[in-house]
Length: 406
Image 1 (cartoon, one colour):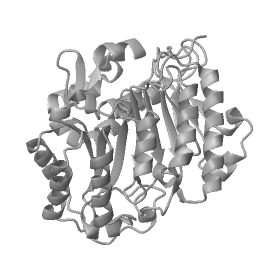
Image 2 (cartoon, rainbow, N blue to C red):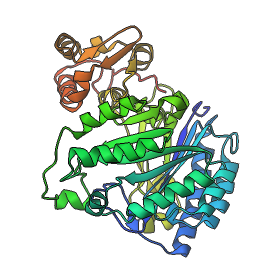
Image 3 (tube, one colour):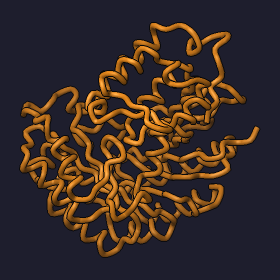
């Protein structure tokens, strides 16, 4: 059986200098050069084994996230990236290759190595330009370090740049929130992500939430500000600069939102992969979040947990991801994958929310309206409840239909 036509690649680097209070991703403080070297060696080994097994025809995007990838020395990245790209179909000619970076650990040597070895997009975790907010979030970089990193990028980086910002942090007021956006947009990055402060399970803040109040209109005030500065919203929390064009859209994340296949490598990384035979259930593969155990792995197929996604679970996730996009979900692709229209799958939900003005189906797409986007999570919980009430095509077991994916 041939491999998928396209398979995006995510590499998880769990190491950082200190763990931020809001972070729910698998990460841990670790700055030992020998451990970094051993981890990258094991990551290469997993990449080689999995790519040989899956045999993708192309890698449309590569994303190296964490943790803090730039906590690892440039020399190690130099060796690793050369070896990694040699494993990929097409070599270093990956259309979009991103690495996350933090201001306090980014160096000129990092930027030189990344550009030379095929990384063409940098995602910088700024989060805020306010010293008070940075301290509350537990960020290592203060205002001075952020400014220095941005100067460094301006002088030494010609690839694409994305900035991450957080809004509605505890105690944050309108002036403070708009100051972050004013500073961020003034830098004219190609792309900007504006995330809501949330209490992520597994984070320090989830166990002990900050006591200061959260002002809940700041995100929507931020949307108006960004539109006025020429940033186009294409996903709930993501924007591209109008002058940079749609090429600035994060292709890798677009693959997640469109439910395209991807392979996650490293401790704590997950994958969504095609079934093992034509018409087979899509598979979810997940490596345990334990870097020490990861270093000892001999058989990566035994190390990762794997399960098939039922048609109902896959449909729920497809809607959850696809409706995040302002462009919505393509009707033709939906029918090809699920064998019927959204109205066939969720007749009451579609009728109710179409009438309420939450859902529309203009031309070739289904999409949530501005009102629907504001209430997306409860809307999708309703959709899942309707799926659970219905009997028929999505029920797992004998007689259930095939999912034609990807």
